[in-house]
Image (cartoon, rainbow, N blue to C red; front, side, top):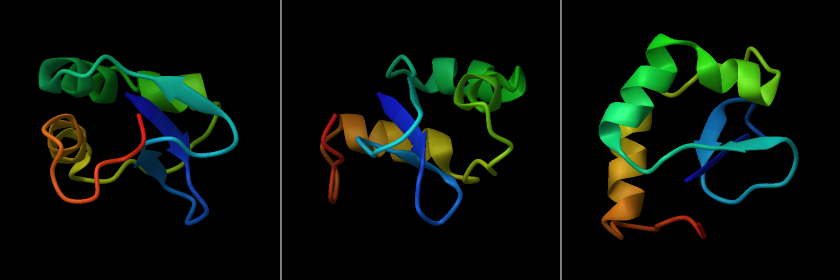
Length: 70
């Protein structure tokens, strides 16, 4: 699952331009990355993470509404 800083200045799920990072598509992996602050380090950004990042990743994997191109 690809994460990148979007035009709004927050971390977004899916294919976006610019510096990005990949995260394993698992809810537990997302939780660990957030707890360890690994996403910000990988993106070299202090952009805020959405509160529902885990839910967005799970929804994207399930092919929910408007899944990203990943």
